Length: 223
Image 1 (spheres, rainbow, N blue to C red):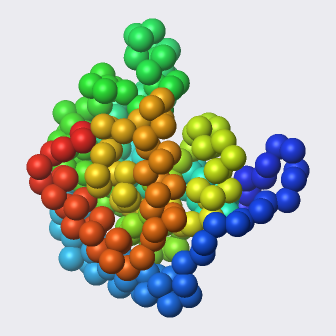
Image 2: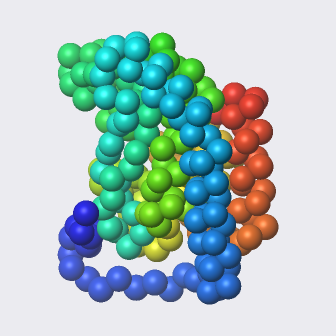
């Protein structure tokens, strides 16, 4: 995964925004390594049970892999537990015209008909995201940061795309913890929240996002 995002006009990237301190970045990376390793070890029985449930339901692959854009525009393969039916990528045959239009705008669908029974539970509890601990351990993701996006989503950030790609994406972040589906691309609120995090990232903000994310999952808000 060596492909790097570049501006179409080939102009040099100018980063005039504030950068986090090296101390903050070191603390964050240590937390990512230790936290993801312990998470994978402690949650191993749960990961096995989820894998078994997915396999029993329809016999398909346990994991879903998708190319996402990471820090500095580098592509990486992000892992999730598969929560959709085996042929979910065949959008035209599984979605109505209205749902297809919604997907093209927001890259997701409310009440997506492609989601399996096990998948609904995994999404409501955010357990489908657990395999991303591997991405965190490898340094492709951080525990906290803007959500990693696909290449088509970059257009929504306009002139701020380099700013978005200046930080490592996260398993959860400011937008996901405080708004999630309640703030979307069409309104511009999702972009504002992701960029707000980049401008204000700190150990204290990361701690607040971490615990707010847990509360949001427990309360099932923004799903």
